[in-house]
Figure 1 (cartoon, rainbow, N blue to C red):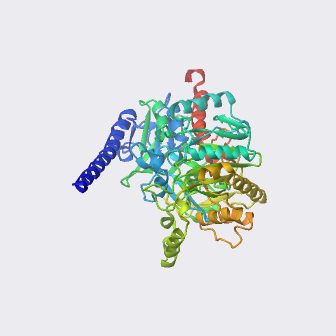
Figure 2: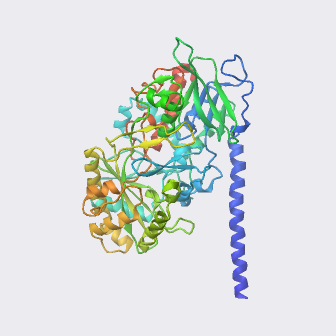
Figure 3: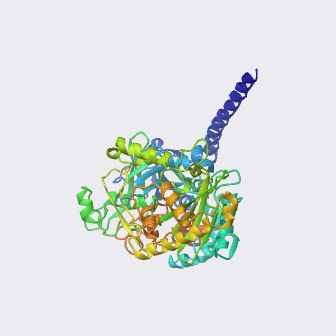
Length: 593
């Protein structure tokens, strides 16, 4: 009888769980269709009556935004106040995707390497496993959720209007940003930072201040994520159209002989592989705006015929404009981590607390993502280069030996790896840079990406100093009291950290003896790559593409450094800021904004 009752109880729990999942999916489907009636699938778009050469057809747009991501969504919402806007997003919607919506599933979204995943994996030529967003809302759908503003130095460097910046940040914050409830791991981390001299304690603040602080988060108190896609609710539904599963193939130009090339629209593919064309209105101030991110935008420029002539001709792409700087100056903030084992269960937490040092490094922490029932065993939370590893190994390298080595490596990890967390050290403004080049002309494929981590000795020196500080944090009494572990030696901490790290960089026997070698061999990413379309080289100070008309770039590809400790706040702010700037430049006071 007891067994029967137990089975009945288990059955009831399963039914309730399934009902919850179905209700979540259906409820969110109905909710987003009600709140965002302008979002629809790309296949519903009709362009049969339109052609790039015809006049007066019935479906032209004042702005076509390529990429509904962290910058593209607030930009579209703002521009739609006064003008017709078409957003073309290659991914789907985040609202009914439980892997995107909940903090507890953060790692699962990254582990999904299917073609429809919100996360598209790639491996840089440096051997570091990385990811790019493929979903409405962009990186805000797959990141760690930390929200913190850029420094005043960065705002000045960008020549942005401080008054408008200070109006644009709150516009974002009122809609999707929350004050976190500090997790126990994050409290121990905060106290440890202060004990090793990362001071003062600045409390909860969005501002970029030296010392230790608690920042904002786009996860609410229920652990539910609020993304840049929600900013679209501020748009004008009568003037805004958002197409999902709309993969832009290229920007189309009028290249009439003797005239400056002019963007006239784009060609995109829908979810059933049909091609469509979207066309700009005849107004000379109408624009195609690339907001596809630091990888997608340089790739789109190249596929559209703007880039180094030799590279374009090699790919048989007609040259619209020869510009040697497209795809150059790519940088990614190298990150390294120290694993801290724990004898007690650790609550899941992503970035909530940060140490902003004067060494040019940031110290952050994550915890608890190796112990959930549905997690991939032995993946390692936010720094998890191991997530989806076998899926990202090129097929020819998936030998039986490689697979067995992978399995053995997972089995050899200490059991404490399931119950701990990481101290993360990130270089603030890397000097080392690389480039993006095309591998083929298929926009769905990743280009070849090189970051050249630690090529510059100053970056390596800062990493060493940052790791030394991270070790001190890990060895503090605050962590030993919390984890119920004796304070580990530096060599043991480095040793278990090397074992917990997975990338395709060859390891050396002196990883635990040389911090320089440790930095090089265990480098990973926190997805803050930027560059490829720099101001003065690819775009002007208004981010209009040099040498052509009616084409602009608004995303992280214009940055020469990643803003703040984590860039999403500034990228979302920039979308709002540039939308307001464009409206004011075009309409003056009549913009009403």
